[in-house]
Length: 85
Image 1 (cartoon, rainbow, N blue to C red):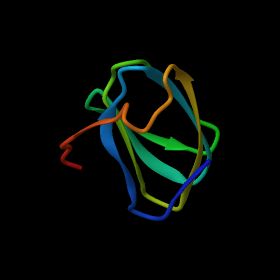
Image 2: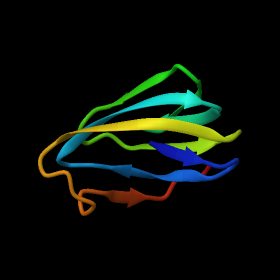
Image 3: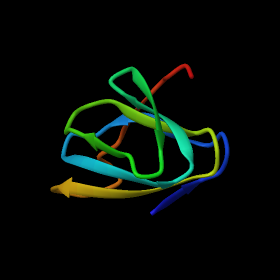
Image 4: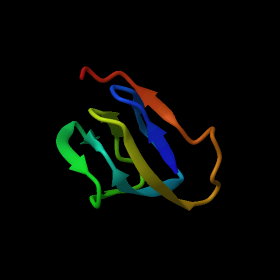
């Protein structure tokens, strides 16, 4: 489970060996998938396919659950990119 305080973010990134599903539990944020922004809130589910750029920024205190599917599930499977919020 991730907890992001107001205005904190998870960097714009992609993974080569895993897909992810994020479920927003509480709060609001701006979710980005391949450059497209959308407002998310408690109850929203974000599916992130393998190899797609993604990020999230809290606009209130934000809690979400991250489920990763792939092999290997390692920290080295993160490529970070610049993104202008």
